[in-house]
Every structure is written in structure tokens, then in C-alpha cells.
Length: 288
Ligand SMILES: [Zn+2]
Image (cartoon, rainbow, N blue to C red; front, side):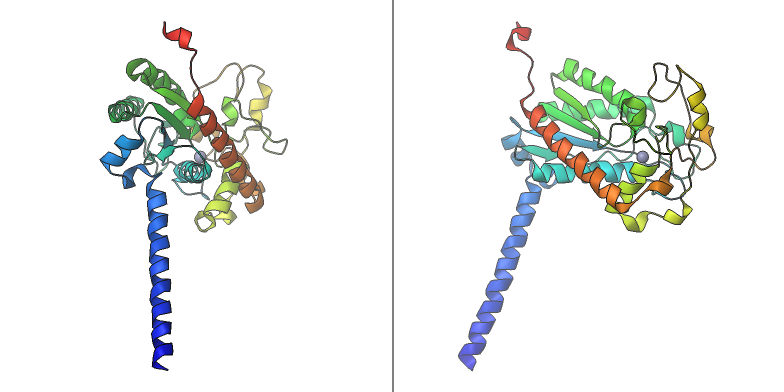
């Protein structure tokens, strides 16, 4: 009886030990891709061939039905999952949650940097990476309002610090060349609409207040041939210009299934982007 008890105790201890070991392994494997969980020595050891992945989002109104951090949550979730599935070497930088959301500053809860501050911040990040010996940086941008500055900084970091820089999006924004589904959003869904709401229903359903979701599609934009989202002439706008809710799209069309599909396709695409970004190179002759 005593022996049996000892064996049982031993088994329990062994199981507990195995659990602890696997927890430690999990922590170690998570730490191996998460910048802030590494030591300076770890970064130094891995810097040469690694991709630094920088999720960047926003803290801004997303209508009455989605949380302020939607863009940051989506960018970080896609980046984290893609790096977990990526077979190459990539490190996840801490998400830049507050970025450029001037077009939503009218709404309580929005926090925005100025364009100048964001440029300076991104320049400092790039310079720090160069100092660490990292020479490849991939932005994963969850907020269309950041895109223009990210394009500028990608070039600046290339020119100033010699970094190889890349700009990717979980979903290419509709007003920046993204493809719209043929539905009642009519290609005008740029904020808190069907896709974004679906992804949040999939990722964080407890944060979505779906019964407050309402359709706000700027159909009048269809009257203009040259000026519009994704057309040859762009225009300055505040989300308030389109209505009091801050929504530009139709969140009532959102479903968890669409969110799962959109998330999985974003992750799969980003894994492919990481593979390409890890080998992308300019021809050697360009250096001479
Ligand atoms: Zn958003």
C-alpha cells in the first residue's frame, strides 16, 4: 500500500515535473521569438540573419461596437501567429499601439501622435535596430492612417541606416489598393466595417458590442469619377465627415466565420511575406 502510494506520489511528482518542463519549454520557445523576453546577449547572437517584425496599430474610435485598440489587437495577433508558424528566424518587437489617428481625434478615447512624433519614434526604432546589428525590419500595419508615414520611414531607414525595410498589412486597406467584396459596402468600407468587425468577432468576441453596429456607407462617393477611396485623386478626411458614428462600412454583415477566414488568410499571407523578406536582396551589382 505504502509502495503503491510512493509510486503514485512519484508519478504525480514526475507529471508535475514534466508539466513544469514543458511550461519552461513553452516559455523558452515563446521567448525565442519575442524581443522583450530576450536578453541583450540573445539579440546579439541572433541579430545577423533575423527579421525584426514591428506590429503597429492605433488607439482610435471604431464606432460604437468595436474597441479602441482594434487595429493594434489585429496587427499583434496576426504577427504573433505568423511568427509562430514561420520556419525562419523572426523576432516580434513590442507593438506600437498608439500611432497616427488624427482623423479620429474628435471622438473620446482616441489617442494620436502627431506625424512628426511618429516619424521620430520610428526613426529611433530603426536606429536602435541598426545598433543591435539587425538589418531587416518588417512593419505589419493594422491602421490605414499610418501607411503614408510608414512608406516614408521605410525609405528613410533604408537610406539613413542601410536597413532592408518592408511594409505589410493584415488587410490591404480598400483605399490603398485592397480588393473589396461585391456587397452592400460598395467598396467604401474603410473603417469598422464588415471585415474588421468579423476579425474582432473571431479574435475577441467579448469586446464586440454587435447590437450597436449600424451600416454607414458613403454611397454619395460613387457620384465622383476621379476623387474617392482608391481612385486617382485622394482627399483629406476626418471620420466625422462621414457621419456621427465614425463607422465607414457595414458592420452588420460581420460574422465569426468571415473573421476566421480573414484572419487565417492574413496569417498565411504574412508567413509568405516573411519568407520573401528574409531572402529579398538587391542585385550585388547595385552596390558597385
Ligand atoms: Zn481599424
